[in-house]
Image (cartoon, rainbow, N blue to C red; front, side, top):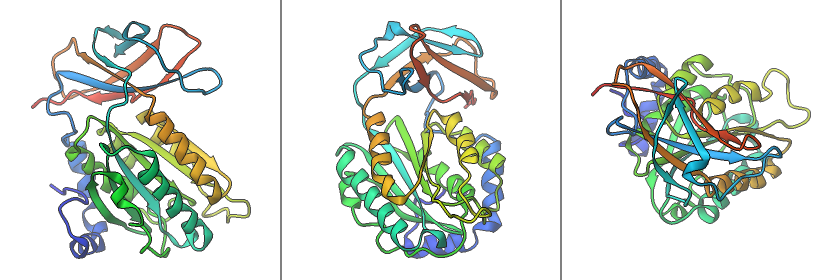
Length: 308
């Protein structure tokens, strides 16, 4: 089985991704056949939840009794709950294609540095990858995050934009992470122009992982229509995970956008329940609600109940 970025040094990583197109479909097939996720067992289903009010402001201070979880519309008993910040395993994917030349890549590298070095905690772990027409591992899982400052400085933008391939190549990383809570942050200024995989295929692979996926899309005025970033495609990916896509108008807005993601990661809830049904390898929809209907939740929309 292809194991993604981890386990390769820089020379090996370049060699692997030089032939990425030859086996990327194999990654997809393996995922469809039931690639392992982080959960060692599926007995307890763990769900990370973000709660916001009608104005989009994060809501804190809720208790276990404020929440309801439904699996395939059947209410479940919440057996685990915490509203305290727990460590997070976070991946960063930075667009290093030709359209990011100049100030955009400078601002993006600065925003990522501030994010991992100043907004995360020492107990968190981070991996970094850059992508153009192929993905490149910059750093495997690393702790504390601050040591990754400046790791993206060596990348010079060139080539096309293979967002879907990069997302799929990153997915196996989350099967070998340290922490239960996980997130992936994608930064890009263009539409996918170079992937071998389709949006539908990338969505299905990510559906079998459980990180919140966030995308920051730079939609600069004057961008070519043919390569302009596609927020709706990104929302199809981020929405199913519990994350979101934010559109910014310039690279200078990346700093505040990453700060908003960090703030959300600091104020999430973690819930767990034991499913009332036996494992059957089927997809099960998850719905998390707050009893106060003035509040709204974001969480992953389901999981595969994989037999072991």
